[in-house]
Length: 246
Image 1 (cartoon, rainbow, N blue to C red):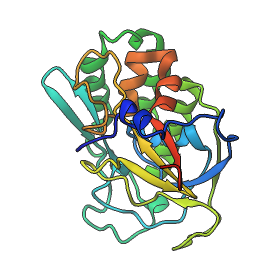
Image 2: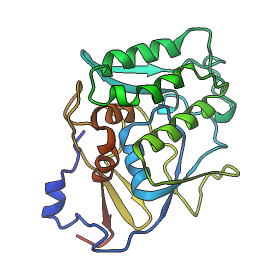
Image 3: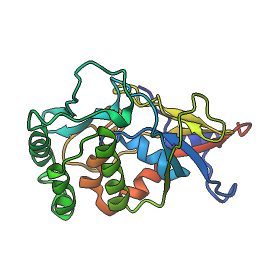
Image 4: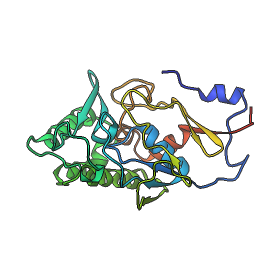
């Protein structure tokens, strides 16, 4: 996947900040994802406000029950088993997690193996590890707890609300519910009258490719490797282009 570089945007005169136009609050409509990939939190941090879709049907083959972290031998997928098997004709909030196998122990052991030597592992361990002893019946509840924790640890200034009902074509929010699929991280999204370019910002990390977007790495990778710099890195990942600026 090719991503637009910051330098290229500068050459085309597209790199704008609040000096060029006032910051506006743009409400995103987002699904809940398991330890969401970096572009998800980058868009959320840039917008400052989002509604979490609480009434959609469960969508398979998305980041809703899986994530990816970087290990010594490459990318490691983590997935949450669900009750009902391939029966996906149900509401997301009614989708139940299966505890027939000890997947929480396996996920934490994998995370420890990947990030035990990361710069901020010890700093955040006491906040992250207890999550893997938490029992949530629904996948939606589990993912909501993770999102709130990541926002708090990264100190993101965002406002979140829940939808009251499902709208197929919402008028008052930017609909980003269906774009979160493994291997298909978007390079840009249309937000109101703007295009938001998602950049290939890199950071020093224990394992993994220099291009943080190529694999949709979980936001946990950024937290463990960059710690308090996470929020600033997320904000650098999104460049806003207004229509007609070219």
